[in-house]
Image 1 (cartoon, rainbow, N blue to C red):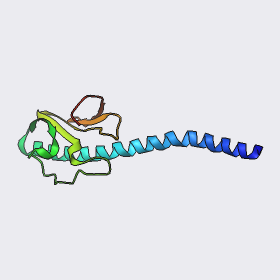
Image 2: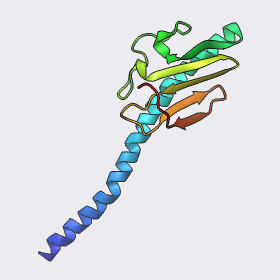
Image 3: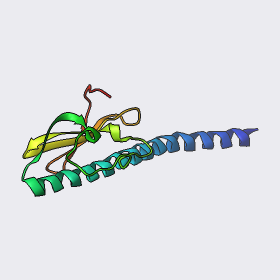
Amino acid sequence: MVELMIVILIISVLAAVAVPIYRGSIQKAVRAEGEAALGSIRNEVRAYYGEWGVYPTEDLGQIMTQDWHNIQSGELDGNNFTENSYYYQGGGSIYLIGVHRGQVMDLHRSLNQDGLFQDWDVNVDE
């Protein structure tokens, strides 16, 4: 009986350590998916800049409602985000692209013209 209690205790300790590590890994994978799509969008923004000398001028809005890129419908869809999860705002020499946190991330994630990622806890239309 004592042996069984020791086994249960060891399993409990291992579970207590493993569950937070697993959740952290899932969160990193979700962020990586969002960041990969932000990188694709950034390539489109830079291509526009290379051709026109300025970044596309847009109010904050979903990427797929804007006509300055060559991103095909469904191209940004993944396991955790859809094409409607991504947004862009910019013009002239600055821009900000981001992904709404939805139900899968703690914070919104964005990428600016300097290549810097930032996390935001803001109220936006999700």
